[in-house]
Length: 481
Image (cartoon, rainbow, N blue to C red; front, side, top):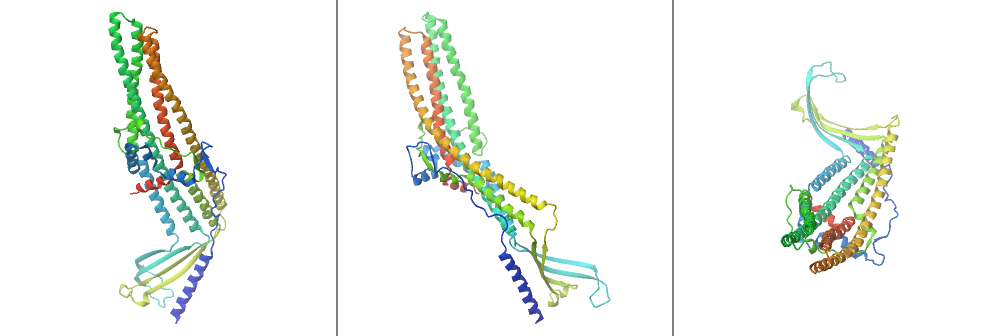
């Protein structure tokens, strides 16, 4: 009867503590999404609009496939799987996932098993005997300790840890986005350099043949030494561009190899820059699409974590209540340890409350609130930068497209100029200086056209980079091993 009464009392004690725990509230502010003044749409041309569904489809597309270059697709897929920065970010996500698990464990009782044996002389007070002989004591027990989250300290800590985990995941997605864009732009630059190298070699070959003909004409006395020297100067000027371009190509191939997670090696290409398709990008993009950008999501999760940490620190103002208990067996004779009389148990609780801390807690609260303020401003600035990057990307595409059209017309004009100059020189109407001027201008214009062509293709890549999209999540999943 006495034993049943003890058990009932213990149940009442536990239920009372559970009611306190359930009725407790989490101190500190609950997170509320900041209200920001953001534009409804990002538009590069007021005369054109697109529907949300089309814009969403464009943003979610695996955009590199729209260039219709299998090599670019191959390189990006390889980089997503093997890039070192992405693998490091993936390992960091695993770390935060484990830390979140550690934080969640604090919500549950910590149960430990313990077996001890001690031999010595122990006090005989209250044992009913005057004997105080040396003896051994054997103890086998299971203990439990549980901090009652009355003020929400552990819940706020879990909230913060979860936000940090999500922030690390968004950081990984951001790196995936960056690496895919870098591979694409580097590949476009590589094709542009190779095209410029072809133009340069063709120009050098043409001038080399002209030098050969001029040498024959000089021997006959048809031209002066001055004309030959002028042509030689232009020949060596073009010739000097070849090693410079080859150096850039090899350096860029090494950079791409590193992005692929490999040692520097040659990057073989089959297509030319002229064969790349220029994806059509809608000119009106709903601003809500930018909310999916990894950098914006990461900044918000950092803000959520900082907000939760305020509650963790504020809970230090209040008492910390813990519950502990032991259930086991104890005997001074190992042969009788399984005897029912050897059973032991106890349940207890403790309260620790701050009385004087010298302003330590209040200053910790100020620190936590200041961190939240800083991260709120960072979040706002991240959103503003996202809008700026997107607007700049659309602006770049529009004006680069216009610039490329004008440069194409210039190349056409200079081709005609060169033909006319050659014709006038052969008819003896003008000197060879006019021909050299036409060739020099055409050579420069052709190189500039390729640069602008690459710039237009890269502007499209930048648009997709700024919009992010669900393709980032799909590719990010491939980085988890």
